[in-house]
Length: 197
Ligand code: M6P
Ligand code: ZN
Image (cartoon, rainbow, N blue to C red; front, top):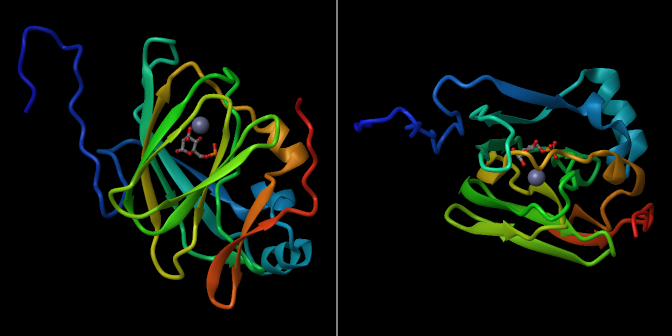
């Protein structure tokens, strides 16, 4: 319950099992919107010939996109692979490059892959309860490495940060997360181009 003399505060609930936030509408991304992002293009084509699987969805409180507000919501990446590469988000830099972001893992098992414009990279393993502070200037992508469970994270960043997808579409991430001998492994992306600096 929320009580007080103003109506500025907001009370909302986050379902830690489903990742849903009250009745907020979500955005869905299917494989067809990420054709060029998985390294195994034949596997992409074969899967798209059979349908267009949902890879992830995300929910946002829909607060104003001002510098003083926060974009707050959840991200839900489904379990699955395209060839040997795990389902993941597109990933992006922020248009306001310096804008950091925090993710708190609510469920599942995954990685946050991060990369600066200069090609420095970091990978944070996520389990329920772990949280990662993605520093400003770092592109970020969530990857679900569980064979069975959804990866659910709660995120917050300054609401005017914006999303720059073009850079990642063009250059890719330096590291891919693939399955090797039944386990996730980070490998070099042979198609990576250092494109920004
Ligand atoms: C999280 C947040 C959103 C982002 C979403 C999907 O929910 O960081 O801002 O849009 O993930 O990731 P992407 O935009 O890279 O597809
Ligand atoms: Zn972001």
